[in-house]
Length: 329
Image (cartoon, rainbow, N blue to C red):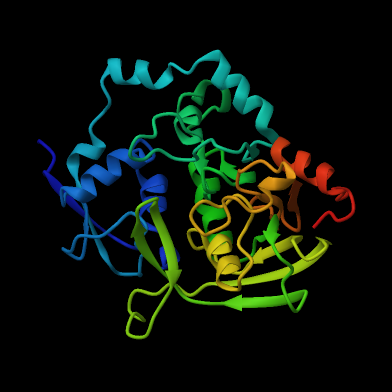
């Protein structure tokens, strides 16, 4: 009997709040992000009969329309193409590993390398990992994402069950994330909290977010960030620790810009050329420094990983006389 052209899958209670793209990663790991975007644009994937985007948050009981094509076995040619990862890319991943056990992989993502594919992005961490099943024994799955130009700690699940458990850890905000950044000026007070709902807004330099305005509550994303000044360079710039409570796209970059202290090197939020007269590289100075979370398979155990600064930020720290060993998050 031939399969139906479409099936409908009901969202479970423990999947409440999961993003649609992450739901697909758990249920249909063979469906890459780019292919999912194509299915969404063509209306082949819908929620409760309506068109949605990949970042749509799910609610228990919703019905997801899934075309049968996603269950069709891959051709031998496609499988071969998927497995063909260059030695250079394999070595790149191996060199990024900060922590590994049978369930979890933690990488130190470099500046400038995309986490997932998108328009015009063919080389990315998700794609490289997809071709390394022979190394990991299963298809590694991303648990969260970092912007292309943000470096640091990136959590990866080594199998489907780990992806589901780690996804729930992030949903319940049981993961403590600490970022380091170099920002324009010195925030006052030196410790504080930014609570500003965000909405997406397109611009000439690509997608970005901005503070929600009156009447936009229906599409606004609640976002909260704690910040703390670690050190300062007179009144020109400061080294800050950032701890996001929520995990919105560009949240840290947008929040720091909103309080008048954009992150150095940020071409989307107004700090592309800050400190360039000091010889600082015009690159985003935002680094996912540390991640602490309960281990999904070890009762009472935890994962606690710290990533060293990327070369361009380490160079800036040395030029500005900042001691990267002074504070570990």
